[in-house]
Image 1 (cartoon, helix red, strand yellow):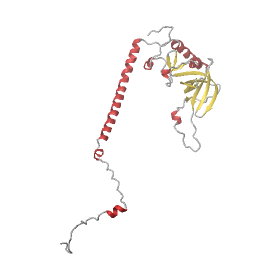
Image 2 (cartoon, rainbow, N blue to C red):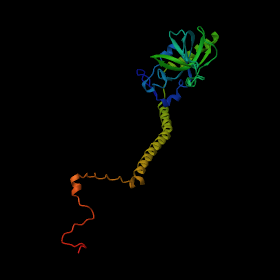
Image 3 (cartoon, helix red, strand yellow):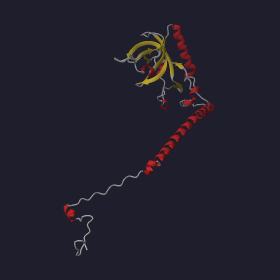
Image 4 (cartoon, rainbow, N blue to C red):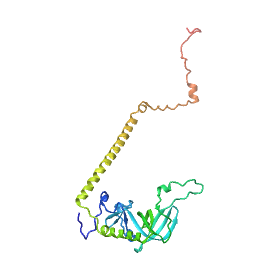
Length: 263
């Protein structure tokens, strides 16, 4: 796919990233280039940044340690590579247990510790691999591996790799052909179809199961055979006059002249 030189380069969907020469590797960058990485709304929270339109997640920088700051659970190394900028590299450290606590919680599992080849002090030259993150609108590097560069030859080799990546890849936009885009889109649809089908089946099953439960509850024998009792009418209270005038039960009044035998 060709692009107009005056228009900004196209940002490709994520399902095309496997064709990118930068997304799956630690890119050798100058610290100035790390700060020049841009972010876009569609990729926020994914720790994916862009150099022109090259997606970058993992970086590799080299420089001198000019400051070290200690915090609970992390150590911050400020690195200067003489490119005109410095950057903070975050290295997680073990969290000591609190007083009265036998073992520390799973904080060390939630925040993996980087691989470090030795003690680090101010003035050391480091090769740091990690991911880019933003803290208070400033880019940092979350370190995964920290190595010492112990000779000038190692430093020269690092800078040669950085210049090669910039000259051969980063300084020109990443361009895909229309055929490659169609193939990536088709592959993404094929991979998405089974997941969508499972989701639709699960959603339909949940709706059907919920309806059956409601029908079962509505037609239960207990609900059909249960008749609530009728309220009893209030009992009328009798006054004293009504009790006096009330005729005794079982006595039939008679009239006429009868003798002692009732004849």
